[in-house]
Length: 89
Image (cartoon, rainbow, N blue to C red; front, side, top):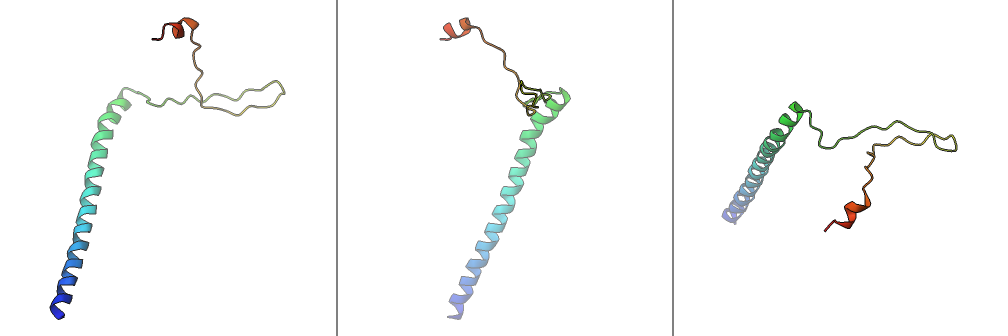
């Protein structure tokens, strides 16, 4: 009885220790992967002043009813010609 209780405690302790070590290693590896993966892209992009998601802040406009329309971050799209769609495929 005493021996089986001892081994149950040892098993529980090893399980807790293994879970703790596993979570620590996974956290460290994900952190390193994030730093390397994002850093390799972010540093040269900042040096080159590259914006991957350019947000242009448009100023508010007044509509026909003299009401201010909300400001937007949408970028105006260039109008495509009809010929571009006719020869698409």
